[in-house]
Image: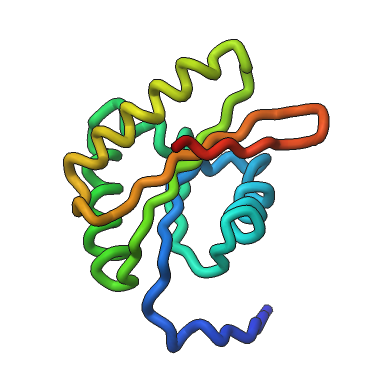
Length: 137
């Protein structure tokens, strides 16, 4: 079986953003919609891994690999200017802890990424109306 999809982006190199997020299928479409419609970015690199940026806190091989790829691939080839880290919270009682962990992950990444790379922290939580995305200042 062959399947062809036109792609007008193949001649482009630069994109402004790289997104680091969890690979959980339940959030894939909503996360993409948030990045595109909520933040206004249609072009972005995507790094998706189980528990996504939460793995940064372990300061293990994942953190080393993702930092290398952000620097060499997204920064080196696509000239990204911003890193968006998206986490999800399912237990609202842990929201304060999640915010602290997000800040800790940002501090870890900031030590190893170029200083002019803006790191944006966002998390989503389930509400009666759907997923609410909160971007930390």
